[in-house]
Length: 429
Image (tube, rainbow, N blue to C red; front, side, top):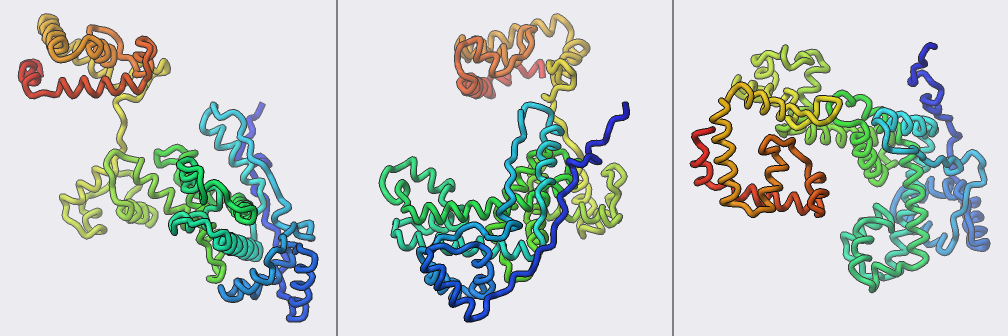
């Protein structure tokens, strides 16, 4: 049976954006009538609010005037059945213990089913979010909770359920952190709902950007998580007045976050992000080969305006690095470090000398460590011919936690790192 490519499946197709009708502002008479009816009924639908915000969201003074006019008025669902907020889809990745590729495919399937926002919808959502944020600001000021400025600004950008508020709520049972007023809670919940919807409808930006960097040595789901955090910040800081598509603005934030994460986690040697960005740009332009083995130090020196020696150091940082402790066999028991150590013992040290080294090490352990520390070091590093054991395995055999074993290991290694002890073993080094 022919295997179907999952990328060609209909579940992977991005829901196409549907061009929405432009939002028209009320005439002065219609505006007055709408505000009067909203105050009398105590409710106002989102589709009417959108038309009010066309003019009121232009300046902060007009926004404050609209907030005063709608004080105590509840904002309800739009009367239009095709409103953006009518679309709601929950994410369910299922079991998370499978392969990373399966988890990514399930996540990408659900993200690509979300319809994209066009320019009009982006600006409408941005104005709604700004209105909700300003309403939350008014509610906080009216409640007079005594929030410090940093926490207040965090609440205005992240909503009521944010880390500073949660942490402060755990530290104290007094105001202002425990008892927000109903108005603050309702305004914060509406702000969170709008921001969540705005973020969800733009998650495809993170999928596309992360896929472009999937060969850079960092797990895809880690890149997506970093990109999603940057997307949230982009939604919070987006200014629709600059007449820029949010997908352009958000893609910039996501790209910066993904590239910085790759810079921090790809190699053992930390290279400034701007240097790696320039290296990637030169490769895209064809001025440098994509394989570091084919690069010439003179070309690197010329493009980076530096010396030949500095160019060699830069080329060294571009090489891939591998951990000696990573398993390279299916049984997950063999590592490169253990293999090299075994080969060294077999071919590099005679049996009599190896026995003498073992006795010298045993004497050093007995002299400097307690009996329990001797057992931990011997089991951890596979002394006396035994296989190295993990911290979890040692802790389970000694009925203590993994962290306690780690602490005792660190303490034992500190005792062994004395110059006098190294002097005793220098004949074997």
